[in-house]
Length: 175
Picture 1 (tube, rainbow, N blue to C red):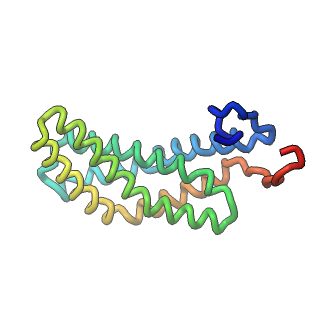
Picture 2: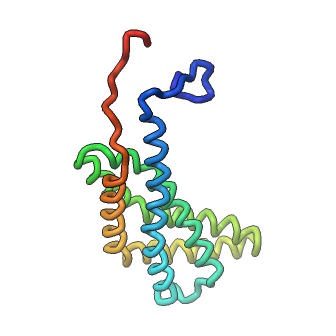
């Protein structure tokens, strides 16, 4: 364990404030991703009857909530990286645009399988999970333009509201 690990006996506070700024940026990025992509998910949920007529409303609501949690975690993880150069912002925008459908569908699958299996048994939980997978993949393809717009907006807002970190001074003489 190094001095940056808070459980280390050698841990010291960060006098530059970069660690706290990075934590705050991650929190804002997660919340912003959940807020921006919730309407995209709602549009996808509205399209579900046309895509998958056999998906039950409880399964679709559970999948939407679980998917939103995955998107929030992705936004929190990528937010500090978006504050770098413009190239960094573009790469993070591409990463979130590609990662949002994957994170949402993966989280929706996990949540649907866990809750569906606990409530209805493993066979029914597996059937519901299969429906969520089919619906999620086809919905992500149909919602690609909205996902791209929300990703661009996410990067712009994070870069606008994010705290620019001061450059790292490098190693000092005292360690």
